[in-house]
Length: 89
Image (cartoon, rainbow, N blue to C red; front, side, top):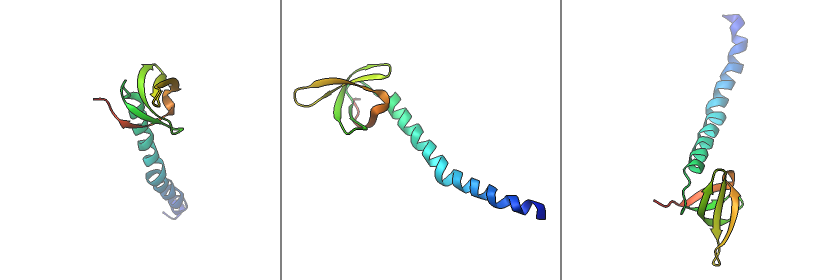
């Protein structure tokens, strides 16, 4: 039993780090991945750069959004979508 006591503390630290740091980060990444995979035309989004727009076209990994009063359109990558403000149902 004495020989295993030296291994107990590092293993305990790894378990604590897993539940405090790693597991919550994995859950957050999964939630973001699901949000980006469920994007639809008509959703109002905010990019990670802070641009507010409305999705008008989705083609694989490229999403066309419409911004501003003059309805300027431009393409962004799917990974650049930071948040869905209002989802089109």
